[in-house]
Image 1: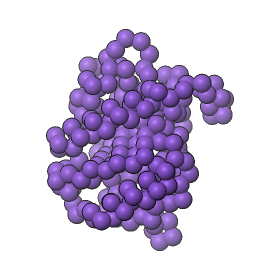
Image 2: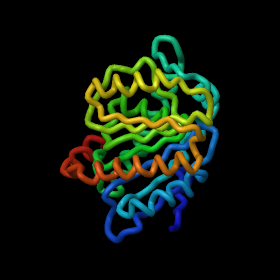
Image 3: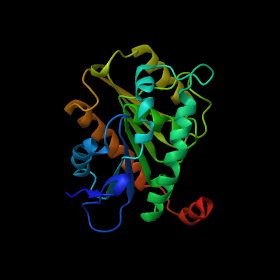
Amino acid sequence: MNWHHQSSQGFSLDPTASGPPEALVILLQDLGTSAVRLAPIAARWATSLPTAAFIALDTLAPFDPLASCLSKRTTLDPDANVEPSALDRMTRHLEPLLRGRLRCHRLDAGRLVLVGFGSGGTLALHMALRRGLGCAGVLAIGAKVMRPVPRIQRVDQKLRLIACAGDGDIDHRSLRETVTLLATYGIDTRAALLPSSARSDEAIRHGAAYLVELVATAQRRDQGHIDRESSDAR
């Protein structure tokens, strides 16, 4: 498998199967790190997902000063902290890139899966829960779950959370309560608590199982509104 460098936007990995991709997996790195660290993880996952294209974005470097505050807080309260506005700025930076990548592959947002590590996972959850991003699902590994859980924008995506005790203290009860609440809202949500770190072999294996499920969901989505979404983005 060969990764293709995409200048300032990171790296991409084409499907290993012949034909156009049936799903697009976007990987968001933790703030303060480089997307190149995600290349071996995505290459490993791609062996089980031959019809999916992978892109590891390396476009969050301007926001690296936010890394410490996002990684240390476990509560993202829009009434008390600055973090949600920072996440909104990152979202506005990222959304046009996602639309452009989808257009390049002639896929609509229903074929998109977001995978985020650490602060990248926090950003992916923010985009899905607060910004109403249309996608098949989100896999967040070692992310900080937003509290309080916001008013839900949409319920047609799946959320898969992997909490990693090896990266710091984990509030077990808060995680269970969050999953229960999201399920009450009608969002298909599952979570796993692992003793290891976000990039451990255990986390990557567990993430692979979740990702196969999310990509299968994306592949079942209708591509019928690609023309409408493309015109909306113009």
